Image (cartoon, rainbow, N blue to C red; front, top):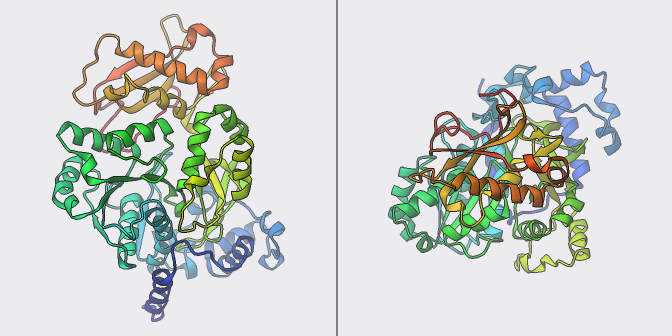
Length: 499
């Protein structure tokens, strides 16, 4: 049955976005907004109402943040996969949504998420934060090149929609969608790039590095395009930012790139800002300070978020959030390892350690948003002699001068048994296109990785015996079908006995 009020709701909702200044602060406290969302979802979403009945919870008794914090956590298993898709939507109507998005399935089977065009407002606001605050796209003609996979996968479709919303809002942005086809990206670039003041490549970090490297090999002068990068999908190091930025001719690490913390479940949750990047770069130079702040040998992604749009909480060292949408989520346990830091709290920490990030502040006035840091999920680590070995540590070793130009940056990390049945840390590394497995390259890479593991990972330095600290290094050609098949999302670890 046709919904006669839908056009009015969509028109009013989109007008609210188009008329709003960049990164406006929603009215009311974040906790109050989350509580109001809970009551609305309990009254309108059949699946959530049933889940509350199953737990013996009367929504009328949930009246304050303390009661809200006792509500059950939602997961894909206990909520999304338990109920039919229409039951997850308001009124039990799947046809109230415009389309569906599909997750990448990096941790299992791909998942379908119903979406409405109104869901794109909150995500477009995060893109606006990047394009306005860092790239000054309100003042520069900008070509946005969407390099995420297209089709039903959430990244490419959402990114395209949000960039078009910014264009409709008045930003001088032109969007082109070659997807993850390097040949097509490099075809449209010289045709459209000269008409823009800057070119923004949006995509998965390893893929964008491949685009830049292949382009350089084909004679592309990246500097003429004033490249900017919008990245999502994995944690990368500041050495990676410097390496790729240098190859693309990018001069300001705090303003020429930005990583998004996003998920198919709810779109973009937070974004890197010039301030968060400046702080992260300081922490990358001071591993002891980073370890004190984050309690880990890993350097996480550090982003700022709008607590009125995405209400974050923590649970046993992992993140959960509440947000509205076609499938509204209340205390959804995303399972990413990480934590929350207040805006003033983080700046005071930096000051105590002798760093003032004031130079990274937006002179036009950026909102004082809190920070969320994200390590990713523990299933992407391996244990070796009781030490957790993280891909974030290994990748830095592949980005050191003298070796970085011979590899793509992709690798697979696992633990194997040698001929004497001793456990060894094995790293299979992808060579850059056209680069042969030269004599001595494997040992140089192994030593580079060992040095960074000892510098960054205190567990590795103390737990792993000296004779086992140098990994077994195996080189594979670019696009190797067993370890680096093209066209699929790369996994940096393998489960024990995995293939």
